[in-house]
Image 1 (cartoon, rainbow, N blue to C red):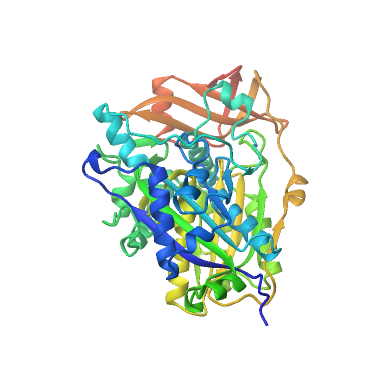
Image 2 (image 1 turned 90 degrees about the vertical axis):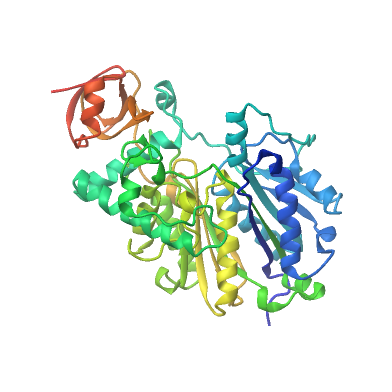
Length: 488
């Protein structure tokens, strides 16, 4: 007999608005309301939204204060609890994990989770010199999910290193060097990985880019596929220029039955596990692994008495190729396996922190179509720091939903000291070059001292930056002087 408080996903929705005219644009708040209404339609139960007890909104690039309260009022549930999140691509899955626990504990039995971005419309409006309307949503959430850890250390920030497009390519280059690949071998392999993601997007009706792109097109810089940061072209970056929204409705089994929701559409979260790598690239032990992903995965499979090979479908968080490669290795997945169900954040669409809501909704669709199957969702926030995983199935779990955190085990692992204003001998650990209109603008180096401490350096030397895009610099000896660097 299943526990009547067992959490279950009963409503899902995804929307994309590939508008041609800004007159047709819709702000994220209204997209979330539309997604909520679509999720209600998916349940087959009219009027369900007015019974929602908690509205939980994933933080976006927008500037709303409390969009959850406005949404609650519009769906006829003005007295519902409201919650938001901090920034991070991990928070959709984290919110689902916490929501499932609250439902299992009997604290809630009907919850709406939603999010949306209008990055495509925003870019079009900025080019046109038009300011898009934004509804005022005054007030504060009842509570916010998450703990604010820094994404960048002070020594990174001092050199202007603060964006994912600056940090992830350093992980990629370190990964290449760790694997012993040449620059040519590496970019060929990675572009082929991304081309396989592109092919998945062709079959995903919700994907933003469904045209299919070849590996050669992905790795070749062109006017439409410009260099962003070595070794990544635009088609290896998360695509935030999307107007996309999604919503999930979760309930208890007892509530789902009381509402008359057909069991054929129920999707069960079996277990969720979370844990954060040492925050900031300044202190993590290396750039080619993620102990947190490994330990989160191990705990998840341990408490569900399963393993990665038992998963019928997998969606690895895919903001950049290195994130997929590292996660696959840590979880024991072959790189040639199908590692996405959406096409990833490049081709499926990367609506900032809300991508995972789309991957969960897509997973639910596929699990419904294939009764008896199971899928793994992984989520990543920050610069490969914050991780939340969950196993979903169309089958009810044998045990009650479990939510674990492995932070204490991660915290016990070694971290590096990061030095400011260092002068002396170093070895290049990784590096990248930033581009603007095909021209290199600045080069960054992550280095290690002979004692194993980490340092940061940058260069504006045009000849050196040119070489950095043509030659392997990982493992090279150099002399660092404060924040500059020279090679012997």
